[in-house]
Length: 282
Image (cartoon, rainbow, N blue to C red; front, top):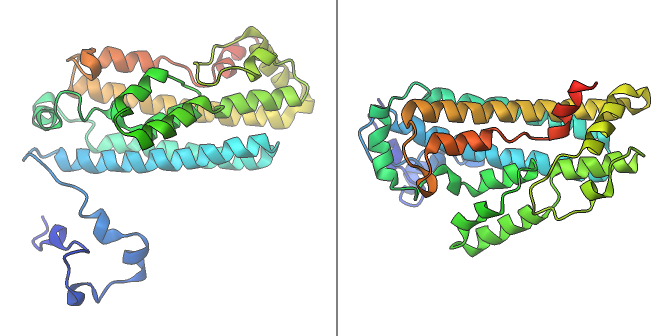
């Protein structure tokens, strides 16, 4: 336990003498600010781990949006080698994101209940993470009703509406496949991007062709890179479900829906669906 009042050394209250020994490291990474962002409300041993892990997750959501947004632009530019590098980094970020659960994966209901009591009845639910919503929209999991929790914050709501209506990374990949002469139907490329994507047999057949035809080696590599992203993201959602089952059970959560059932329904959604279903006939 640190004995000095390091959390009270806020930049706006520190004297010139207290901050005169600052370094480039402290300034560039805003270390003082970072260590004043956690405000435990209980004496529960796991609360600091919960707060910091949740904040780290939020930072990774932002990083993943940055990378996947870059990958989407690279797909539009037909720059497959650049996309592969970006998706390789993304997989590493997803591994790190999954590891954030380890800080409190053994938390029990007795550890969690005091924290949950301070969060209120849904007011601080993880469904209110707008950056996570940006992330899943980029991955193609469109859900218009998920904008509702943010209606009272116009700027956030507007940004989410724009992300909902924009093509996902997978939408852009399907357009790339069509540009390369593969039989991707127009209905998969020209559609209302705000609506959930529905898998199509013709798209599955196009992926099968990619994997069988040696002239599409770069697209096959792209398919495998996307599959890795989907796999690592699925592992994170599985870990979320497991931690919730262990700490929360099936108590009512968001909109009074049993928490585990609600998470399980989301966890069952497949990212980049035809990349998985095509393997049956490859």
